[in-house]
Image 1 (cartoon, one colour):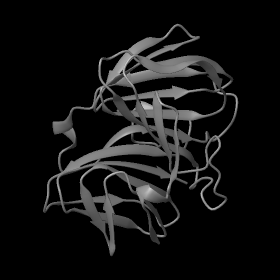
Image 2 (image 1 turned 90 degrees about the vertical axis):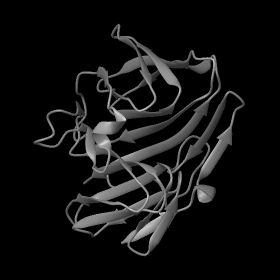
Image 3 (image 1 turned 180 degrees about the vertical axis):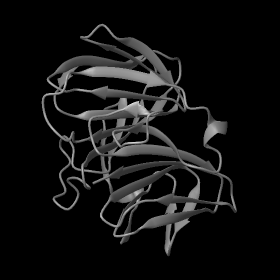
Image 4 (image 1 turned 135 degrees about the vertical axis):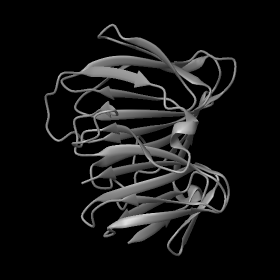
Length: 232
């Protein structure tokens, strides 16, 4: 099954400083057909105005991946962690038993990012935070694992879930393949560009929900930046 979820069909809320779009039910947006996909609970497509952001707030028992598309986001948390994650890079926060954090765009330009929440395999992990760069050239023509709790993905940022987040850059006219199991749930979003998966064509910021496939081949119709989550 390969299902297109057009960007125009997903939830949206514009708060002025935050222009948010929700691939799954979140805050005041509720669609009973889109509450989660496997262990993937949230995929928010956020644009954060310059010199603004999320003040300190708490999370518990959630694995939160932040993929920065443009600009940068500055993080502080109750564990004493602080860092700035810029476009193309990734940060991961395991909320575990509980953590307070803030996320601010301290830049003089808008920041755009994907906030991806994955349900952990079990509750009560110790909270943690980490970030690392993923250079564009390392992802050209192939998927690179960004965050994972799966065996064999040791170079990725760790999460407490049998899941992985991956990214790729694919040039127009080229294809990239992702191997998986028919029992897994994949969710693919082109951050930029336009792609075809089987008979489905997806434009930038559309969602593609995939299951029942042993692998997927993604053909780039335009130069495309891809983000994919693979969960049970």
